[in-house]
Length: 247
Ligand code: PGA
Image (cartoon, rainbow, N blue to C red):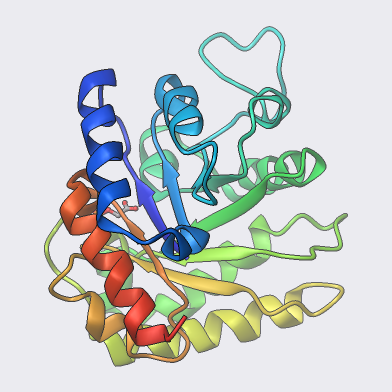
């Protein structure tokens, strides 16, 4: 799956042009594994535009409940509006909004209850990377975020080293592949029904480096920030994925 994370970007006019361009660059079968997460205010626009296709439109975040929570939306509201997936625990949410494993775990429960696929984002800082603590960090993020009371049927993890996000720097694709194998093992042992998650890589993915990542067996797709704002580049990434994964 290739997922666009638009973060706090977009407006009605730009989004429309993006959608038109993107739609014209891909054949319909490619839509089966594309997800787009625009801002909440543009969710409906994108969902309406791609209504007749298999493109999944998701959200970047929800809160664990609705009601008297000014400025938030709940999983129930997202679900009623046709949201099919939602990012959880993105490093920007963890850093800027102080989100911890406990809250993230509750968000995942809330999404599952409302039939929305969670995409759990995990990743290490540059200091943790340098100190060789990447695997320990990822393992603790996974263990604390997986809701204990749920049998998960499906989980998507996005491995995003914080130092690679928006920096133009990336780890070697082989190293990412071995980390993805590690993540799959950890999730498998941490879940009651031993599920093996799909693991996306995120962090400065573009249409030049995408083929290095998609050449690796355990890299099941990408979460793309900056490069997804350009419909041409994002469509190139989707086409590279399709060619290399032979789907
Ligand atoms: P980037 O962002 O592709 O701009 O590095 C990825 C992300 O934050 O999900």
